[in-house]
Image (cartoon, rainbow, N blue to C red; front, side, top):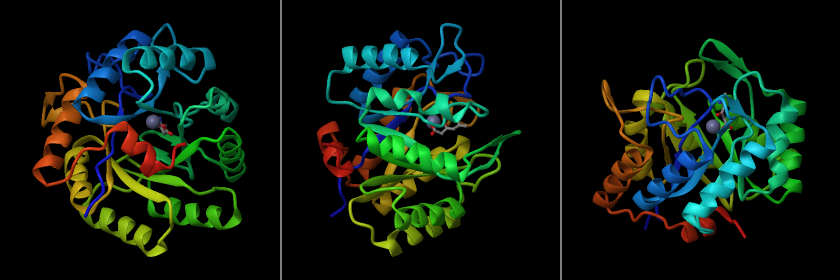
Length: 277
Ligand code: KMH
Ligand code: ZN
């Protein structure tokens, strides 16, 4: 039997703008509301990027504190908050690591570099190592962001070297221009590679970018993986039609899962699957 589906909602991101998606939550209050709506629709994890008072991407610890407090105020203690240590392209590693001292339950960990649209998203080996150590030191469960197969291979090398420690969650992020696309052959290859490793206490999920969001979600529901949706990755409900909220995207995935005979994980079940104490 397949385990319950954990739905992560990446509500804001660093690249999405209000110009392109007017319902994008950027203030702490908006993020609190969006998280509550997403939770009610079936999300048990919020992948969190925050903005400063001008709406610009921020890795400032105080900006994170404000958003986390607001999400907790609105959603309660159950929801899992996963902070981004990826930030926006070009952010320094020190700034990217700074919110880790808030000791969230989960944090993203970017394993390798890649072209990211017109930019380069740099994750140098020494920086990955120091970020992994900060995450471990703060007893945070890492989510490894995998944009292409070389990153997945690196993840297992880092596990062998003890840089990355179990338990961890793997997120395939497919469809970033410069990374692997969300074609089903790519997905199948990554999942097969993951399964061949038979790593205990380790789960996987997929975040399809743009038009890949829905097909990747469907594939993961069927294959027993987890799913991430939200405005960080995709602003549309269907071709040319903007989604009205993050929750609308969550709700669709939750419905598809139930139709396919998979229950949607509660935050408590997600904690158990991810090994969050
Ligand atoms: N904004 C991207 C450059 C993460 O959250 O860890 C990186 C990102 C990954 O969003
Ligand atoms: Zn992110």
